[in-house]
Length: 114
Image (cartoon, rainbow, N blue to C red; front, side, top):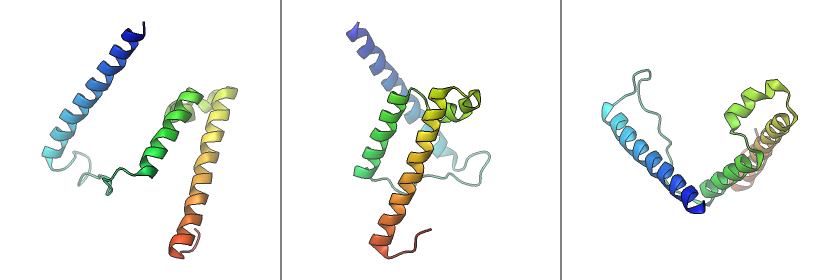
């Protein structure tokens, strides 16, 4: 059974990578998207500890909570306790990150806290 799961996951990851590669290249050749004046790509391309740590934390939260953040926000209207706890925890974590990031910016740059 483990081999089947591993084969399935590898197949999904391969398909994801292939589709992403093909469609990203097709989109880049267009020059501009249909509904916007230009593509909006992130300015940073470097993979650093902050990016890897954030991605890992996101994945762990998603796995432990059992909810994708977008559908969880939509599902909060059901009032189901697990969904509400997940969304409240997610929002609290986002607020804590913003506070920590602002504090770090003050220490680093001497900038004012927003």
